Image (cartoon, rainbow, N blue to C red; front, side):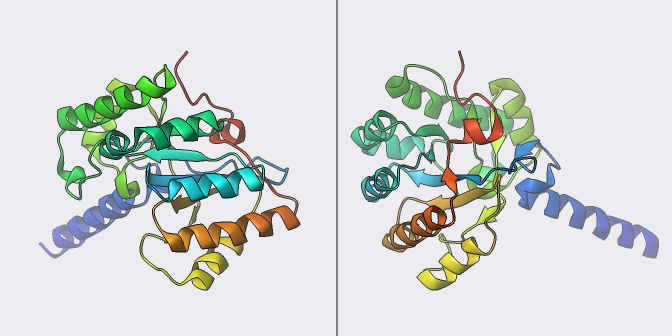
Amino acid sequence: MKYFVITACLWFLIVFLGSAFIGSNYHVKAYCSNRFEKEKKIALTFDDGPHEMTLTVLELLKKHNAKATFFCIGKNIEISPEILKKVVAEGHTVGNHTYSHSPFFDFYGKNKVIAEINKTDDLLASVLGKKPSLFRPPYGVTNPSIRRALAVTNHKTIGWNIRSLDGVFKKEKFLLDRIVKRIKPGGIVLLHDTSVETVNVLEQLLSFLQINNYVVVPLEELLNIKAYED
């Protein structure tokens, strides 16, 4: 009985960590960086828009001649379709971040996950004219239902290897220091285009990257994958 309990606890720990950390590739293969990239190229990704703060993010990206990738929530597209159109018009990449981004998303069954992804795909396609191929699960959590859903929708799962934690902490120095010390060629930075603090950090981050000769490129260039279906 003792060994059974120990084995069960170990199994639970492995499954929990594998589900909670997208870079584990436990349930699905996720693109979290390009470890073979030797040039000073990185990708900036923004979750949870479109949002009114997205407009300021776009201004900063344009100022520094940087192209980013925005993972959009379907319900926010319905609220701010013009902001999404501006994102696309300015040459940035967009991907799917589910329709609701519900805190209960991890408990959805396969069919409900598919419905969330498809609904957001349709909203994105109404602006893009084509279906997005990139998907980022809420909170970076994966599970068997998401794996089975992605086998149907055929999206590529995108993670990160530089997490800013701007969705949790608001101290700008902490956020900037956390990102900067992790910067290296091929990295993917996770940010959120939904707060003033992130915008302030972004301006400092873009200046740091420029001074240190880094180029911010879209995910499809960094990872050599297609962001949209043909």
